[in-house]
Length: 175
Image (cartoon, rainbow, N blue to C red; front, side, top):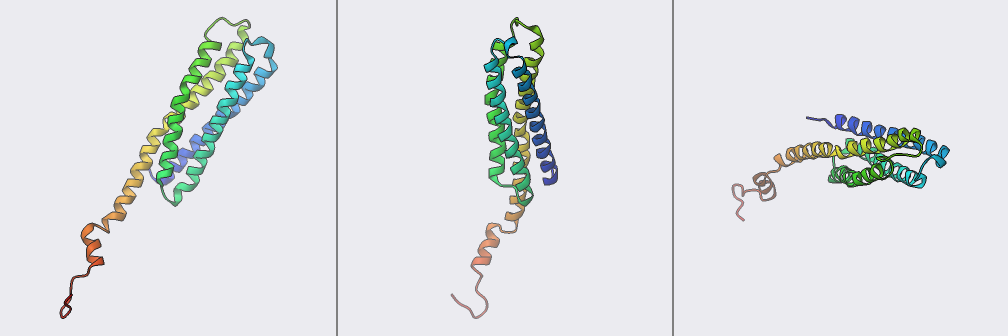
């Protein structure tokens, strides 16, 4: 079983991974800007990079928020945020594939730009895959939350709750 500390460590690791992907995409953006005339679709490459820098940035912020709040207690909102990030990443996979099919999987006028475009495509695909894999972490958070709820409710089962609320009559006390 994962402890809260383990989950926080995993979340901060994923946040760092997203930050590394953002840095790699920004470096690729600089390469695209320096070689605009050697690309057929420099605007498409720049838009692709900017879109995913924004997406990964928002994901990293969300991971950081959940990691910071998790030690105070696992909330359903944390689980939902992680699942939403994973779901959004799965939906964005198509955008990455379309970019690769349209701008990379063909003869290029300047073949030396293929490595830059491949780098952009690989970085986005790998980070999307990492975010999609967060569904496992959401399940771990849900299990941890369920166990905590189970501990809380064990002390207050129905019989104990009614006994506490409606005390049985004592000797001489007739209700």
